[in-house]
Image (cartoon, rainbow, N blue to C red; front, side, top):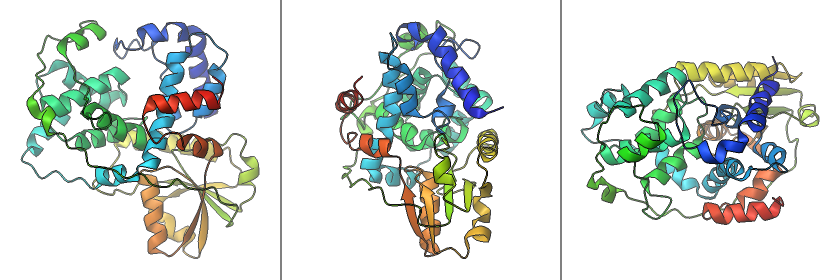
Length: 371
């Protein structure tokens, strides 16, 4: 079945049947058997099977759309903010845990903390590869301020197990909970808030917020210049990654190349790896897209030398800051290959508005798209 139809069917079902109550019920996590209060499209957005700007256009003329539109805008904003502040990503991936907490962290990752809600979320992450957004915030807050664990390790754990793992949204959301994006205004989980929005599904386990809140350090990050669109094609080979697979209206682009490679990045770098279920999910999406592009082929990152050994330049659909960009930049540098990145014009336009706070970005976006 066409993955675009599957994803759009999920979105349309939510819009027509549940959007009207989203603003009122979105913060409730009723458990894995009742998710009708949220759209459950994040795994499609993070791979751009559903394109953020198309979703916003679809919502444009509907009532009760504002809260949901804002949730989509957060994803665009996080992408743009990380593009404007690349040093945040490098600081994150180069983090090394040197404390004596590793055995405690391992126990937490196994769901053996004794805090019922947290342990259940660990189980849900491992079994279903998804967490409600509000539960992600509670989880991160407990991880950082109850256990005192580094936020970077929590962010890596999420990326390992989430089907919708996205480098920018995940990294920056964890920093937001820690108070590093909002001038030391962290998100603090409370038993009362969790009880209310989970409808008392968990045992009454107290959550102690410690003074570790004062230990969060926020290094200064200097903004950088955003990329500029260059001409293409510049090569006879085009490479794309699994986190930007929206191929709609791009047949002319693909036909400009003799071969389109969809690169499956299985390289483990900086101690990062994906769970087997997440890897298989991504491969499923890649195989589906591969069948829709006549001149495409799936290429494992471990086999890249076999296919690109004689190339001096390649065109690459820009994957955004993250492990995919790190991989292709490192490969090109080591093999003296020139990369011509192909950007989406809407991304570049919106990223230029995402160099400050979210609400300033939202105001600019609403004016830009007349929302």
